[in-house]
Image (cartoon, rainbow, N blue to C red; front, side, top):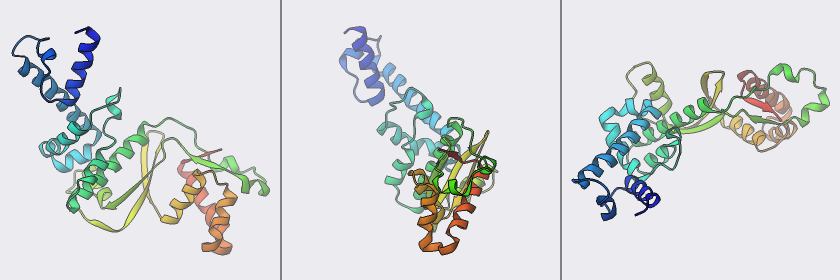
Length: 254
C-alpha cells in the first residue's frame, strides 16, 4: 500500500470505525486491533471533549458523564468535515431535536442551538455598525430609500422552551428551572457589541420587519408594509425600531 493510500485508509477507519481492514492491521505492530481501538476511541473522546467546550451550558445541565453518553452517538453519526475543531458541532441542536421524546429533550435541543448562535456571534467578523448620528444629516426625501443589513455577528434564534432561562441560571451557578414548553415560540436577536455578546427577545412584528429589511427592502418599503397594521403610525413605528437597532449597534447601512 502506497503512503497516500495508507493515509486515506487510516483517516477513513478513524472516522468510521468498524472492523479493522487487513491492510491497516498489517501496517502496525501487534496487537494491531487493540492499538487501533485506542487510537480511534481517543479521537472520538477528543471530539466529545471539544463539544463540551462548545456547549458549556448543555454540558453543565446534563453533567459531564451524561453529556458524554448523550453526545457519543452524535459523534459516531457525524464525522467531522472541518479543518478547525471550532466549526464542528453545528448540527448538534438539530440532532437532539430529531430524537426528542420528552420536554427535557426539546429544551436541550433549544439550549444547544442557542449556545451555538451565541458562539457564532462572538466569533463573527468585526464591523463598524451604523450609528444614529450617521443619519442626522439626511434630507427627508432620502429616508425612504435607505437600505440596511445586519452586522456579521447578528443572529436570530427561535426557542419553544424555557432554554434561555435555563442558560441564564447556569451562568450564575443557580439551580436551573425544570424544562417547560412556552405557550408560544420566542424569537431572539443575538449580536456582539465590541467584545460582549448580547441578546434580547424580539416580537413577531419586529422580527418580520428585520427579515424584510435584510431581504433588500428599503426603509420606505418597511413603512408601507406597516400601513395595514399601524395606519398613520406606521412611519413612527418603523422609525422607533430603526432607532433602537442603531443604538444597539446591530445594523450596517448599505
